[in-house]
Length: 264
Length: 299
Image (cartoon, rainbow over all chains, first blue to last red; front, side, top):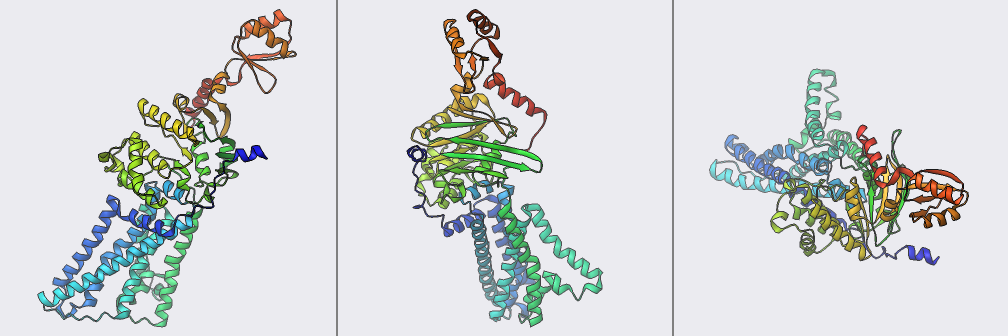
């Protein structure tokens, strides 16, 4: 017994707390912005958002120069790049092989995934806030420079739909990233799938009725337009979200929990 | 303290790591030696929970690695010095680690000083680092949480001779303070410079382990006899060096002919007389390496 006790240096592990989730989230947030590529992605999102509202200011008819118009136009560049941010938040752990460090400092992969999820959702919300602020600024400019209508009526539903759209895209990016564990494959698939679907639905007229139940883009249509979704439209949004976001997310998490982390 | 027990990793039919068992004691620097593709990295990844083992288990400080809370503050791990985001600065890499472990920012400066990375170097992006600088950064990262155990995969790779000497000093003093060190290498001379205990692996299997002195002495001629004691006395009289093994044989530092003459003179019956197993550490290692250069085996 005494030799056994001497064998094991008494290290009391029970007094050490786990890595706090807030610290994990802080690190994951910082990892999105502290590299050159991450920084440029964020700058691109910002610049394209500004460019979109600026072009809209001069190109749109004056009666459309409303808060809803300006806020809505930011959705296009953001919806395009936010998912890339979600994808890279995961795939860089493989492409840059930082996963070796990430998952040794926090062996519970589920907690790392939770932190990444929280980080990209926070960034998505920040992007929404910036978009709404830019929309407001340009709405004021619109009335001053272009004699725009300056209508402020976005409504709760409009804000909700706008936020929902951006969060869906960033989470979908995260899910694709985890599922494919490869930046190029995830980005290509993310952009090719909607195009492939619109071609398919265009060719096969019989599928046209099924489109809102299968195609996420089609189901999201009402979120852009009238902000008053019918029960059927909510159901279609739910079904397509499950197919294209929830299922990839769950499979992606399962894959990440089981994957072997290698350096080469 | 590291304990590895029957660790096995199979990829399909291929056994990358085959029933590997060893211990690393506190206060020692243990070298994990083997050619490229011998299973060193896979074993180390299994030890820290990155690769699920097919069979077997391992513990660090008495528990599986994944059960150590805030493991960075107990175990310093460096698995691949190049596995850092090329677009991050060296200082940023350490800053992220310190934030995650909940350490004071001053630890970052301390560790940069310990591994000899200057302020200017620390502000450069890792993509512009030489391999030697990445190794130093990796060591700094491993030491960040003031751990008791170090697990380092090929840390001397890319270091110049002065750098290897520096690392020897660093790991020695870490061990002298009661730390446990396991470091891998595919270069015999490198590991001979740094380690005092050796675990040699080839084709996924442990082929030798023990203190460096023991293993280096294991070259020579192996003798078995019906009367080992009498033979021992005779060898001593002939001033031939020998050691007795655990399997009732002698390893003699002499040729077969010399030993045969001593045996004939003393009238002892020999039952076996041949070159010692693998003919020493270097020979054994060369054999492992030569076999490996012909067929590439996944790490």
